[in-house]
Length: 116
Length: 112
Image 1 (spheres, helix red, strand yellow):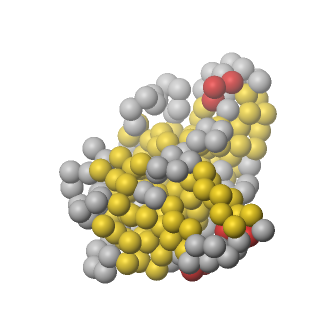
Image 2 (cartoon, rainbow over the protein chains, first blue to last red):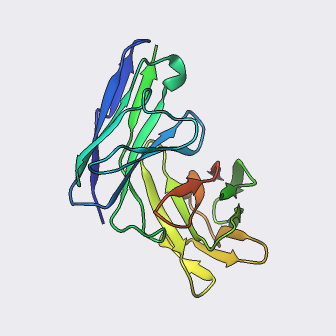
């Protein structure tokens, strides 16, 4: 299993600013992902954070808006850039220990972002 | 491409009654199927998963799900629900590279 922490747990930000969310795992993991959960909605995959290379973004998400870093096997950051109220969501980090689709994905507690 | 459809956005049931939360998926390849639960103001927790073998999968908290390949379904069931089962339930599918696609979720509300 894996224990995941995220910082900050919540934040209220002004329009036009940027926020960087940190994800720390208690063990080395193979895959790290970032999801967004808009109010009352399901989880949408933003990108796969690749260690040592650029993240792989899903359709509708771009690096300029959501730059991601993954400097090692236990840590990743997601930045929400030039924020607008539409970015108000819960942002979740998740990890798997293996690389197979059968591996359980563990989720962090999430970062609740409100943009005014 | 894969997709997951949860047919019911909300399911209200009385305590100790049985419940079924419906999930259908589409995929051109073999898939792995999951049910996750999200309790109020908490993160996601894995309830159960189907990888292969027996089509009836048992999970935590008395939940079980049945994989039906011909109907492309993976419905979640519990014979008797408790107030503490009040939560959002997400069906999910993956095929490879650990990328999981989530359904829209079903809010289960339990009435005393």
